[in-house]
Length: 147
Image (cartoon, rainbow, N blue to C red; front, side, top):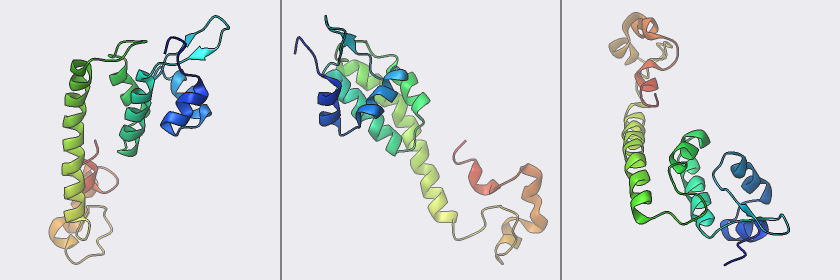
C-alpha cells in the first residue's frame, strides 16, 4: 500500500460519505499524506480510526472528546495494541458510567424525575413541595446522570 487509499477507497471501506471523511479530517481524526500529484492518500489505519469514531459517536460521545483521545495516537502509522489499550481504558470508565446512568434512568423513569411537575402521586414523596427546584432547572433526579 505504498500509494495509500484514496478518499473513495476509504469511503467504500468505512461506509462513510466522502464529505464525512473530509469533515473528520478537519478535526484531525485522519491525517492524509499527499502523493506526488498532490492528491490525498490515507493509510489502512485510518479505517480503524474512522470505525472507532463511528462506534463512539453512536454511543453518544461528542466528536471533540473522541478527537482528543485519538490525538494521542501516532500519525501516519498503525497504532500499537498498547496505544489502543490506553484509549480503551479511558473509554471504559466513561462507558461504565453511561451504563450506570442508563440503568438508573430505566429504573426511575416511571417515577419521580424531580422535574417539578408534581403530577405523579409519588412525586409528593420524592419531591415534596417541589424542593428540587432549589437545585436548579430540569429533571434534578436525572441530570446528574449525564454531567
